[in-house]
Length: 154
Image (cartoon, rainbow, N blue to C red):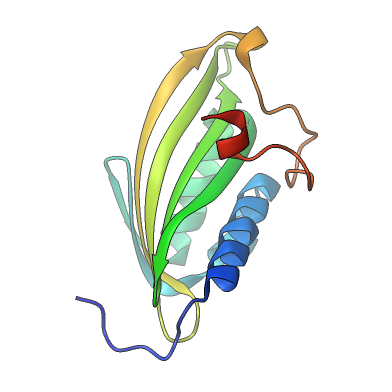
């Protein structure tokens, strides 16, 4: 059960929070990303359990050392008070050049300070061929006007 919080999302602020998270993850700066999470933030990512910013930074460094040319799109699914549910897809390739599209869902819970204190992510990887890739923008934030997950029918 979530503790009482003064932090409450509106639809607009929840959508903005999702886009800010997408942009940050596409920027691939673990130290900057970690600042969006509480110092004692708790994560489950696939089968890995993390606690705290240092663990988040180490996780993200490992992730992007393995998941090359990473491009991510996030989309809000639902929100209520201090929680947001997100669906996402990202494309990447491994060191051997094999491409993947990873699909997932995240549940986020925020503290009264607006920092994420809990992140629960479930993710599945689908091998794809290079011609089947859909995320082609330059490294960094997805350009405004680039199709969303819904527009791509993903």
